[in-house]
Amino acid sequence: MTADAPEPEAENPDDELKRKFREALDRKRLTQAETNANGKGKDASKIHGTHGPAGGKRSFRRKSGG
Image (cartoon, rainbow, N blue to C red; front, side):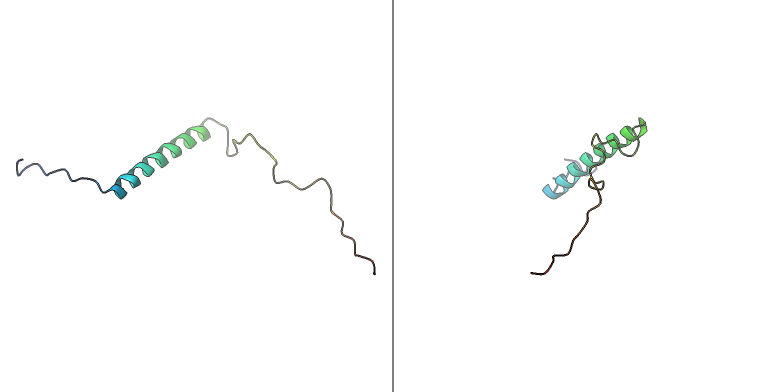
């Protein structure tokens, strides 16, 4: 070993894990950006209207005496 070349330090396992997650997040953001650029818009989901109002207006009745 020479004094000019610094010795490569072994990465801490936590640093390695963080790096992997960061790379995965970058890939995910890239694919989402490409999807939005293709004109599919904000809501590219295949499922629509899942949280709309139920069939009709609900009516509540008081319990009569008893």
